[in-house]
Image (cartoon, rainbow, N blue to C red; front, side):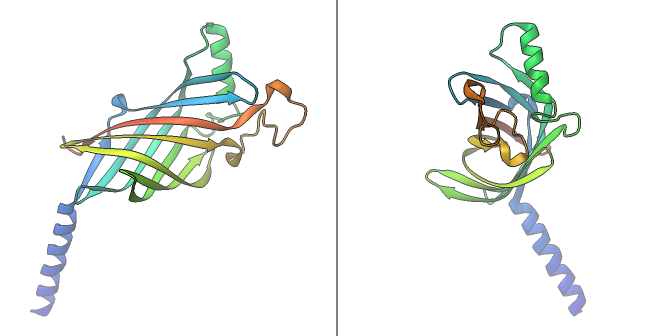
Length: 197
């Protein structure tokens, strides 16, 4: 009898826990990442990277954890109008000097904890680029709209932490106006929909 009671209680607790957790899946078509890379002395380039997949869990209406996979092969540049120069530049971003997408076709952001902060949320977890994992924390706005969630965030990433040192005057001398900032900036906009909706 005691065993049956223990099993029943376990089932009820599990059911209650699941009922309190709601999972939202990334709408890839409605989500995007804008990137911006800058030179040390004037000049910059910008573009877009697509998400491959992602999910975010909510408990009692609050975000608690998530994971997002970025398709690094989807990198495009939007500010170089000449088709040949654009293709050359994007090809360079994809090669080993930068993101090495043949070997590392995806990057990943794993959100391990979420806490309220200044009418928004502070997201903390791990970002993985070129197979290198680094801790990351950043503020984000997250809004639940029934069976959908919208989220936005701005990040600044130090590329040299992931072995991307090309054009960095932290590692190479006499680069002059060819030096590229160690940091690149990301503006993320997410649309997620409740699983099964």
